Image (tube, rainbow, N blue to C red):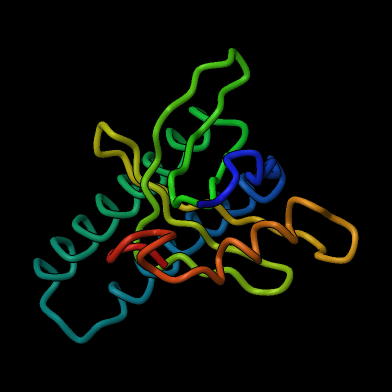
Length: 152
């Protein structure tokens, strides 16, 4: 049985969060330009661009809402995750498939109980950061212990 004291508390960077939103906006505009350049009838281009921009706006909104709800992420070796806000509110999170942890960068796809999903880009140095080292240890646990069948 793992000790509940062995937890990871990650502090997402507001700079990385802003960068993700900016990159999402650039991707939306780039996709629009690509769609406009397709050899299709103008009506189809308009429909395609509208669908693309609608989807991009939904993703950007989801990303901004998720990031605004939590300031810290707590991960337990049992596989449970929590989002902590500045006000002390604790929200249960689910680790979604597509999450990746590497030596200095992690991309966590997280889901809230109300269905909101978003991604968190995190960075760390395992040589200097105890929490980052703990994240890597927990991540290496079997799928059944961390993340469940749909996690990682």
